[in-house]
Image 1 (cartoon, rainbow, N blue to C red):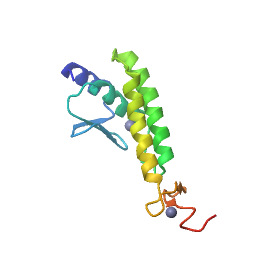
Image 2 (cartoon, rainbow, N blue to C red):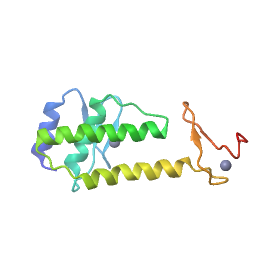
Image 3 (tube, helix red, strand yellow):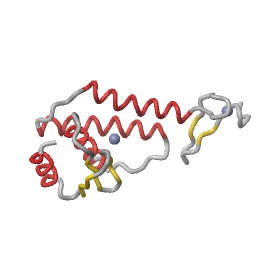
Image 4 (spheres, rainbow, N blue to C red):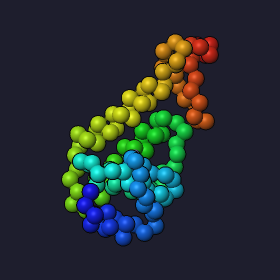
Length: 133
Ligand SMILES: [Zn+2]
Ligand SMILES: [Zn+2]
């Protein structure tokens, strides 16, 4: 990532705290972790800022998380246009797919392999093992 881009972002968003870390992340309510240099680091930076702008919190439900990711990418695209950062839709799709895979794996019942459902409190329930059907 170019130092100038990072400086610009820090100047434009004084309300957020920027820290260096091992990977790009957003820690609610306003800490943005900047990961190492990588091909899409500027886009990832804008994505994490988008989470902060949108006021995202930790969602307990996996579906809520996926929705949040999609929203943050939409916002990141707007910001990318403003900052002249190249938008790579394939990369964004790939990022979202990793969440979908994660969600899918997480939702499988470890005992029987059936897809479980999540209640508002974030707990997973297996319709078969919990005799709900
Ligand atoms: Zn995200
Ligand atoms: Zn089960």
